[in-house]
Structure formats: C-alpha cells, structure tokens
Amino acid sequence: MDVTIQELKQREAEGKNDYVLLDVREDYERAEFNVGGIHIPLGVLTASFDKLANHKDDEIIVYCRSGKRSGMAQHLLQQSGFTNVRNLEGGMLAYQG
Image (tube, rainbow, N blue to C red):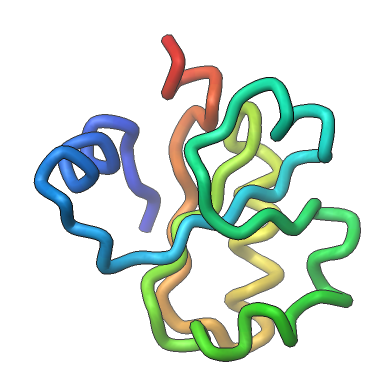
C-alpha cells in the first residue's frame, strides 16, 4: 500500500516519527532537495540491505523524484522479506508541488 504526500506531511506535523524514510535517488538529487531519512541509491540498494536489516519489520516509506524508482525499491525490499514497505506517491515532485 502506498502513502500519499498529504498523509506523510500530516504524520510529520503531528510528530509521528514511527516510520523509516528511505531515499533511493542519486547523490546529486538528494543534494538539491530532500526530506531526510536513510540515503541508499536504487542502483546499490540490493547490495546495501544490511544497512536496513534492523528495520525488516518497521514501516519503511521509500521516496525518489517521481515515485517510479521508489516503486521498484519497494518491490525489491518486499521480495527480500521486508514486511511493511510503502511507496511515496509522486515522490519529491509532488512533495514540493
């Protein structure tokens, strides 16, 4: 199940930090604008699962520029046993919009 920008912003406003943010964009994209979280570019995600091992059962909200790469990351994580992975609909384009 995906998460909307509105839902994420509401949770942030309420101080509900009961999730892990995962940015799968490239370094230059993150340098331009980001909303925090763990940064692991999609191209190295599968080789970096150990960095996320402690969050296997936590809610992970994955984001990228538009939602496409984060959707791929969501699928990869789910296939690797992560149980609660959500894609941020529209990514940073929608967040900034």
